[in-house]
Amino acid sequence: MTKKKQLKYDRAYINMAFEWGKLSHCKRKQVGALIVKDRMIISDGFNGAPTGFDNCCEDESGDTKWMVLHAEANAILKVAASTQSSKGATLYITLSPCKDCSKLILQAGIKRVVYANAYKDLSGVEFLIRAGIEVEQIQGHEE
Image 1 (cartoon, rainbow, N blue to C red):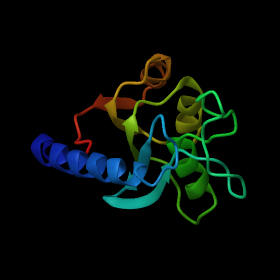
Image 2 (image 1 turned 180 degrees about the horizontal axis):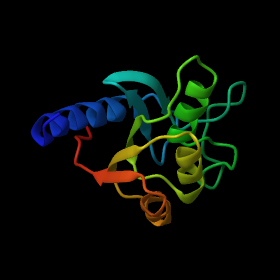
Image 3 (image 1 turned 135 degrees about the vertical axis):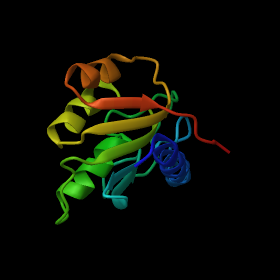
Image 4 (image 1 turned 180 degrees about the vertical axis):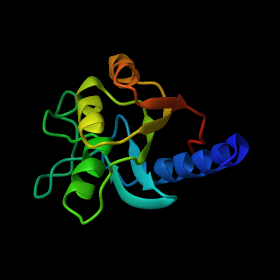
């Protein structure tokens, strides 16, 4: 695929990830993620509480509750519970991965990460690059 065509697909998937993030009940940040393999979305996720728990992501002081799952973790767990494999896939995410999620990305066999906005701590991105995963930041739209 040409670079120009790849960028067109990357922008489309990033924009879809922003739409997916809007499903999150979190007030501080709404993050969306898609896992794409062979130009097919095989999983999706957004940040939120685990199944069966109150969907409020923040505590009384406005801090994120410890149990909240990040969007990419939810997408990886969802694909793990399916018949699909994320080996060799691309992860599209609206916010760059944290250091904890970057370990999951590596172990899930994801080979490429495309993100829109940078998280305050880029150690997760640095880890992925060191691990040989292609990481790219592109601008999507956020409404």
